[in-house]
Image (cartoon, rainbow, N blue to C red; front, side, top):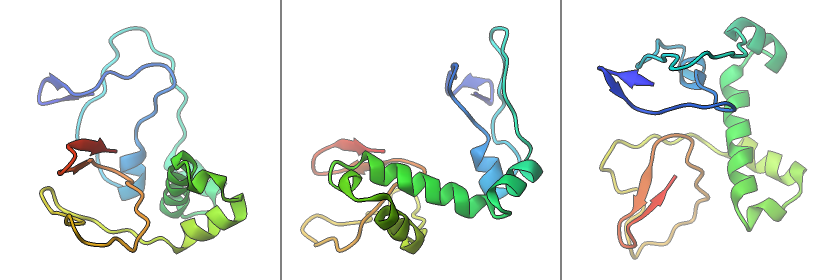
Length: 129
């Protein structure tokens, strides 16, 4: 991926891209350039919508949440129907860069799955996502 002439990310076999444009129906914010011969599989939004039942965004979010739950050592042990119930009850919260989501010393009474972007645990200096 290239933006303003700078390489942002090198992609390889098995990687996929375009989900941001699918989710938000926007144009690409960076270019993708082949640096070798490449063979790709593609699927147009219209066909994807037909396969997923029309609301691509909802299905993508649900699958992202399910992946998040499956990565948790605790929540991965829950059966699929309960995970689906959790996923269907989660809401999207957006935060701007620099915003402190959960200050140190405060109790968190929420389950949080990162759908996009990066967070850092400021006290521990650990990347979360």
